[in-house]
Length: 370
Image (cartoon, rainbow, N blue to C red; front, top):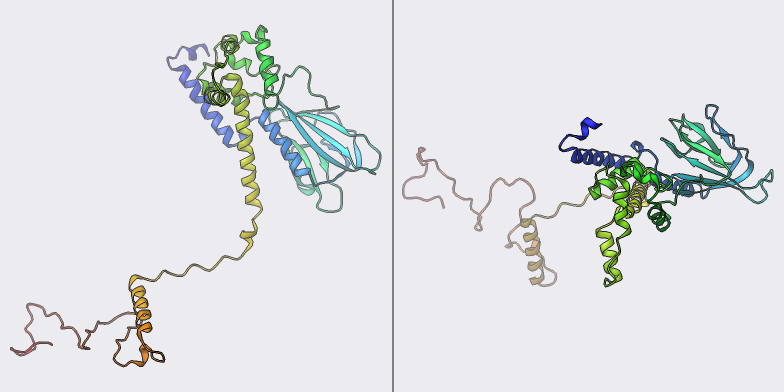
């Protein structure tokens, strides 16, 4: 690494590399490790997918998982979720009259490097589904699965957030900002800013691709000392002469590092919502899509046809009642549609044919073709 850092363009090279990785992860959710936005999107997915579902039976754990068993069984219960930083809380709430009587149970998940939730048919369980919640009959049998290919994900019983984690950068911005600026004397800020941004005690929800995007936007060298970068934010105060709208505009146009720690994850959440809507529209055709395809529009009339049609209308309005163009023998006839072999003059005679220069005329001299 030291040999790489003495390269003259190392700062630009690092920034461009991080930028390309960030863009690929933003566009391809399967390529990025779950961070704050992914946990937030996962909680929204669980709430939307399970809102109308009733689950029942035991919670099933895979035999290869080292996480604890979930001692919960109910004939009918619902599932809801919430997220904070890099953690997700799942609540199992029995319905009134469900057997056996059971208190609500809360689980806290940390997704590790590849964790996610999927709702699939019971007969089509994913290979790495390490925790499964089954819907109750009757109806389509589904399973809400915690899928974790690399098995770094964890869940704990009790529903308490992990102690030591700071406020969420997405949902608790003011507390997050105060927590960072109040603890700048901590030895964690002696490290480079690229390392300090991964400390969940102060940046709960920030991970690899988020820190890369934040540092790139601000053009901050990743190995700059964290304290020197953040101490300048303590002195930053908006001018009291600015109006509220001017303060907001200034804040949006020139965000600092802590503000980007909040706004960049929000951008990822918005992108995730848009992609989810597009997928749902693609899989569920709208009522308009179910209607048979309409017949193709008729070909627009040509200029000649349009002129002839207008001419016939004007002529018809000038004729007395009971007459028509077809009844007038002297009226010019409109040629039928099709291949025209030759045009006729108004007098009814054919046009003279062109005679080649090297061919003698068949007409006697002194006569004309007319």
